[in-house]
Length: 604
View 1 (tube, rainbow, N blue to C red):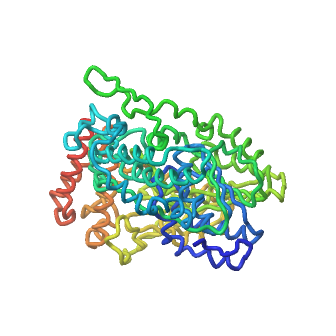
View 2: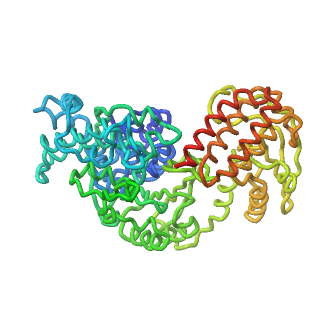
View 3: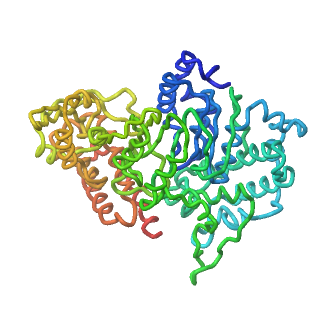
């Protein structure tokens, strides 16, 4: 059931903004494919934004022209809006057609003549034997899972799961052939194909995108083997009954020309094209079975490693290009009609924040808000990349045009400082830019076994003096900047002083995982160069955390391009563990496993 009984009832709207419900509501949490830019983690934040706007002026009609996996469109339906979800990728339209356009009560009606949706799902799951058409199993899976050869075969799926896709997809096409004139048939196909697409996205032998598959199932690190190897099985779709009719289209976003009360914009913000990254989902959805390049090099390896369908370029997005993104934003804003726009964008986007705010501020009064969340990323990690990343929303009140330039430099520098929280700092360089006050290590948090949990204990405070202002910033036992008290310390700082503070912090922060690993070794070694070494080594909780962090940093370095640094650090760890075994409990077996993983990666 939708959360808001009446979208014009402000009191009911505000009562519905319950983040605990949003975090646990199955419709908002489950059966969402892993997707670049997926906003599932941001739904509590966005619900607060939408609720505040609704309080100011009731929202009935809602447009999401870049619907993608459907996370925000689902939220809007759950909140009671009349949702128009749009995306020009076919697989995305099917996902949204199933979860947004179709109500739970209608799903059963669509399959009443076939015994109901659950019965049809059961029949599809029970299919067995060779598929009538072997397309996915021929081009994107090995002949046998047990003897898969990543040098000569594509390993996007196990043999068994690829045949499942082929069998189920053929059966859907036979039992429910497309009929553009029959909305009932469209709904039947959307529900079944969305269920299959979720399985195809979830059990793929990838890091989330289909431009490459792992070398061997799970990759050299055999990561996520349970997900990849588990047999596919269609699930009953998670649906709700909306309070208002919702619809889905497949257009260029700028072609959504109706009037709406609120528009949410979440365009692509980096160079990764969705058409190529998710081409295999389009192949499953369309079932047009385009030819796949099977040319071989002299050694028998595939020349087209991923087998990407060439027509993906038809949905190439200008937002992914630094050259064209600005003009595309301007075209979009001119085309859309709504008194309020909420634009979700990433601080590392193709269009810089300052330029973006300049564009949107021409269309109305601008507000800006931001939150931190763990951004989804597929593929290999860089040496310095961090998972903590701040996403922001620009709220444009188009009925309050000011035409005034908006200075967001203060916001940008404050957000950049906040993003340094949790980062490790080099103590020696920190002393060069601030006055340090060493303190005793406070007790670690209760949940000591949680992975990478931040220690709340303050081991030192750094006093920064700039432009007549003083700020005392706290660091934990591993010299990581703590968020506690940070905003309060900087509340009266002006932009020039904040810029000066940021420059000092950036000069002292660890440059990469290799430097952090080196510092952790010093922390863990008795009599090390760092003031807290003895205390860290004497406290089991801090030591366990430091060891986990050290091993994680080493794992990030276990790639060919970091080979020299990885091997040098491993030698240091072995020497230190040999001399001070009690300070490195259980490290050597884990180091052996890491080095074995690295050797496999180095060989390729």
